[in-house]
Structure formats: C-alpha cells, structure tokens
Image (cartoon, rainbow, N blue to C red; front, side, top):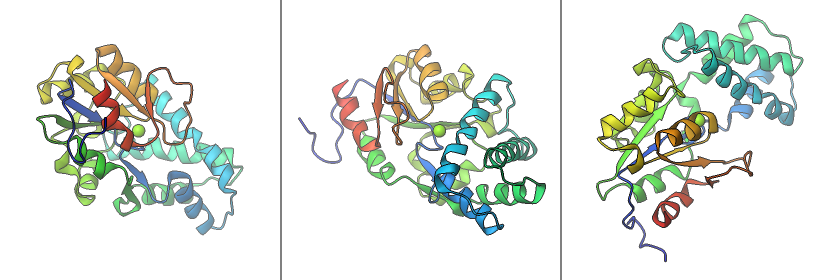
Length: 243
Ligand SMILES: [Mg+2]
C-alpha cells in the first residue's frame, strides 16, 4: 500500500535523525570531482577514476580520527590540520606533488559553502517525513559552519534538533553525541531512527543504543550490509512505514 503523497502513515518512531555529509549534503559536483578540478586548475591533470579511488583516504582518516579521538571538527585549526592531512595523503596516493599551497587551495575550496549542495532526494523526503509529530533531527561530525550551510540551502529549520560535533565538542562514534540528540528530541532510543552513510558512525553506535538504523548507500559500497539499507532517501518513508 502506498500512502497518499505527503502523508506518512503512522509509524512507531517519534524521531528520525540524519547524518549530514554524503547523506544530506555533498560538495558539487562530488568530492572526487571537485578535488580533481582544483588539482587540474593548479596544473596537475588526473584521471577521474584514480581520484575516486584515492578518496577512500577520507574514510580512512575519519576512522583513524575517531580511534585517536582527534576531535577534528572542534576548531578551525584542528579542522585544517585534519583536512590538510587528508589532501596530502590523497596527493601522495595519486603520485602528485604535495606542498602547502595545493593543500591550502583544496582546504579553501572545501570550506567554501557555495561549493555544496543538497542531494535531490532530501527535500521530498523531509516533506514526506515531517508532520505527524515526528521530530526530524541531524547529528553530524562537521565543523560549526554546517549551521550556516544548512541555512544557505534552506533546510536548517527543517531539522528541529541539530547536534553538530564542531559546536558540541563531541564526535561520532562517541555515544554521548547520539544521547544528546535523543535528549533534545525528548525521545527514547527505541522510538527513533538514525539514517546515514557511514556504518562506523551512523549504524553501529546508534544501533547499540537501541535506535533503528538505516544505511544510505548511494554508491553501492555496502551491498552486503546486514540491516536496513537504501540507495536513495525516496525509499525511506516506505521503509519506515513497513517497520
Ligand atoms: Mg556522512
């Protein structure tokens, strides 16, 4: 049964929390493509496929930062140190010359809010899921400027609860960040859903707390994922209605 457009049939969940990066927002046209544009502009032609491959460094560094509790989002200095380490490792993988100037150029590009967009499936999903007293929230490992980016993109107020690591000083997968979101929403873990693209941050910890988790696997990187998995947020309302 398909519910009428715009109306979410009764679901047992009282809150739905979303990750931000690569779940809601993305660099335009994409992280690897924007990276390649900057590097090429600086005089270093690269193969698009090689940049996609090298961009696995981002996930490696996210994982290392979590293991080492780097708290990379919590100040501009920490953010820059983290991202410059990502770019330098990617340039190394691509056998391109490193250097402060190129890493600085990349950092400036990826911290320019005008280089980001919402995925096309975000607004329709938010419209569909809002109402019925369901709290829509956001929990993100992101610098404090995510607030301004969400405002630029016209969706800040669509997220009634926002827990951004750069503002709160806590990063996923620290259980306190999910607990803070639950507390602000006034819901219990088993009444809530967590939706995101990174299993280590968006699935395992919230599931351990008792939240229902949905992996957003836009590039089919986790086809063997055990648990709810979607490739497009358009699938989310029906998935939650069926739960
Ligand atoms: Mg993400």
